[in-house]
Image (tube, rainbow, N blue to C red; front, side, top):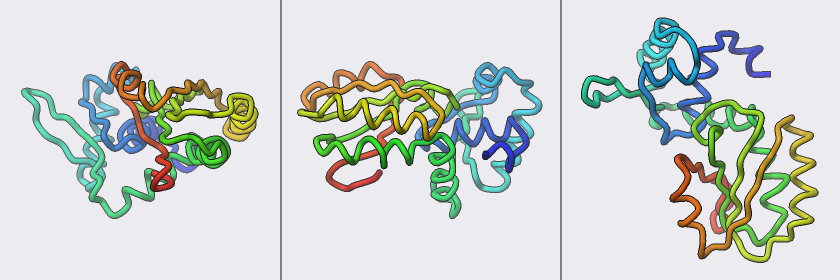
Amino acid sequence: MLDTLITNKTRLKLLLRLFLNSESNSYLRGLEGEFNESTNAIRIELNRFERAGFLVSVMEGNRKVFRANKKHPLFGDINSILRKYVGLDQIVENVVQRLGHVKRAYIVGDMAMGLDMKVIELILIGNGINKSYLTKYVRKAEKLIHRHILYLIVGEEQELLYLKERKEALLIWKSNDGKQ
């Protein structure tokens, strides 16, 4: 759907990589390896985004590292569109909120790093979550978003242990405040 509006595949990959998880950052050669595309195509899009104010950059040694500009007036809108594109909004609506005992939910793995994958890895933090009820809603969400969802239920006392082992973790839901 989004690839119909944004026909440049490099541009779409950059949006997903840097705007889906706003804490994510990367540099040109790293993106070249991830995207398996020429540095020139990636450089052109990075420069366009930076000139438009969508990206900010800092020099780390001899590398220019880019990240999403969270202060840009359209940042929230872009992030919301990308979450809808990959189905994160429907995961929250159809799975997490109806379970009642979930304290926090994280996306981990490649999707948390902003890579558009067909598998979404989800860690649910909470005690007393009904696994059969969860399985039912995960299957419904999978049909809606056309992606496979792998999930792990972790007790609150084990949260830091599991998240420490993950390279990236994107908090998508918190029970006290509602949606993240």
